[in-house]
Amino acid sequence: MSVIIVFPNGAGWFKANWVFRQLAVDVSKYCGSDSDLNEELEAAQALGALFLDRMERPLGSRIVESLRSVAQDTLDGRIDGWRKTDKREHQIYRECLAELLSLLKQQQGFDGHGFHRTGPKM
Image 1 (cartoon, rainbow, N blue to C red):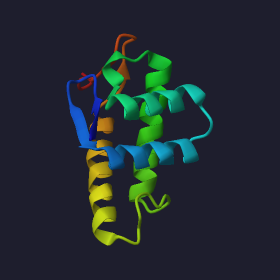
Image 2: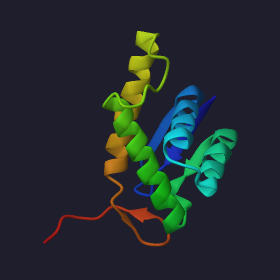
Image 3: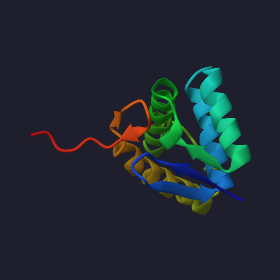
């Protein structure tokens, strides 16, 4: 099984269920007790998709910031993430998070109907 995160700019992050599940566990553990955020992540695991492109601004913004924070903290070594004792799987997990972080950094704006990518400032 796999899970996809669908971004408003059309990009998708499609990974094995175990990757998303570990990310969701870490978000829940390190980003507080936001019940709406946790419910969305649980639903995404069950449905196999997290549709950021359809989310309302407040919740979507909280999810994006939580994912960004946990991904960065994991890559920086502040969060263990996936089984550090299994170096190969841990490296795969880190590579997945690096890709996610890159996609998240592209999601800079939000227009109330879905996130939108902001263009260069003129």
